[in-house]
View 1 (cartoon, rainbow, N blue to C red):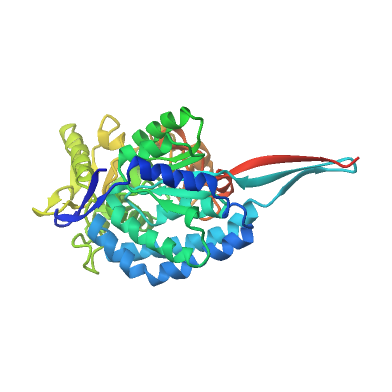
View 2: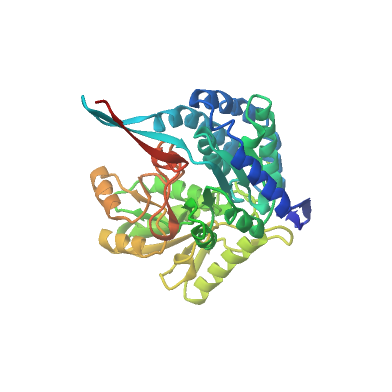
Amino acid sequence: MGLITTINPSTEEVYGVIEENSNEEINEIIRKAKNDKTWPLMSIDERVRIIEKLVGILEEHTETISKTMAGEIGKPLKAGRHEVEISNKRVREFCNLVPVFIQDEEIFENDIERNYIRYESIGTVVIISPWNAPVFVSLASIIPALLCGNNVIWKPSEYAIFSCLELNKLFDILKKEGLPDVAFQIVIGGKEIGKYLVESDIDFVSLTGSIIAGKEVFENCAQKLHKFVLELGGKDPAIILEDADLDKCAKEIVKSATMYTGQVCFGVERVYCAEKRYDEFVQKCVDEIKKIKVGDPFNEEMDMGQFSVKFQLEKVLLHINDALQKGAKILYGGTKIGNKGYFLSPAVIVNVNHSMLIMNEETFGPVIPIIKVNDVNEAIRLANDSIYGLTASVWTSDLMKGEEIAKRIEAGTVEINRHGMSKAGCPWGGYKMSGIGRIYSKEGVRNFCNIKHVWVVKR
């Protein structure tokens, strides 16, 4: 068994060390999940009654989880509290929505026959979650998978393992409230452990991660035809039209691009602004980004901490340097802060083009590259010029025009006059290489089910 060592990204000192699960331990976890039908045989009402108790448990442990995330992945305390708060809300929403999404669905009936669809548990579900939002993103798959009656095996990111262990403790409390032990189990390990899990005798894999990780899961699932859903990266564009409220969109775009140090798949990573409003918009973005307070995540006044892992800081600096070498200009920020920790000042960068890494690859950092466009058609063409297609936004006072533009953008979610997180009940996932399948919504919940057609002949 190997050891996992996490580093405090503020001090670059060791935060904690923990031992990985052995293959033998994982085999036993899978065996229990495959053979125990206690949870799948419970009614949906019984499952909801148990899972909804997690809401109160989460509230009681908000501070502990937030402080752990601040120390392990550098998330400011107020951002950590916000993550737990929205996670709590999402658990409540799933408890209300999932029973509706998976109830029997009538297809056809007459005097001779009846046809209907049942949504039944799929079996043993492996959930592999990322380090950037270890509570929210993990629960976004764990809760619907459990509510659908599956036994869940959770492999959280090795870079946020102690934050996830705090969340796991809450499920231990939930087990005292009726959740069967085998219904939810955690596996501790890195990439090789995740690969071993995916290749094992399980039924479904839900991954939130990078394109590289998605391709590997895709290939590994193919060997045994495991079903899967992949929520991958984004290079999310924002289109600013001439009639946009620049004060609002500059504020919201800066907020989106710097949230969690820009380490969010739905954060704005490219901006295409109408030529007539370009100079004004750029200045407003600079003014807004200067307000972002960067520093110690335990300082309640900080808006932004540091990168959670060193390789992410290095990647963002690589993108910035590549852009500068090719003619880009930084108007503010983009430099490392201090000698200790993975801190970077949030940046606004101009004179960029699509030959640069910063306009092609997912940056995953607090950098706002802005391009001047002549018209809407150019903006749409550039927005679609990407291997990604997760989210996008259009900023305009003409809502009808905004909706027409939204139809032409190749992305799983297109927002008008906002750019942010998912909404309960609405599908979340991407076009192109931003993923396969959807999560959160009716379609996403049903991923965790086997779909059975029942045909009854009456006479």
